[in-house]
Image (cartoon, rainbow, N blue to C red):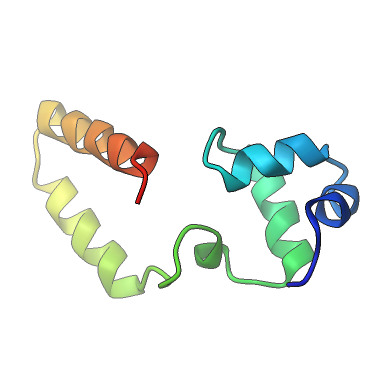
Length: 89
């Protein structure tokens, strides 16, 4: 979007270091901050998480598989997703 970290931080009333931590994947912002980012940047929320937006079909398929799991396996799936999220590309 052509904004520096400083400019973005100012627009959403956060610190520059916080914006840097988000960019580096060191922290995950609260929902309200995500809303502020989406609004400020004028983008779809999916664009914050991926170069390729998650499609409705992707979410439907994930939900279908997750809904077929028992509680223990669903918990493991969520933990696995958290680990994947933290892994460097």
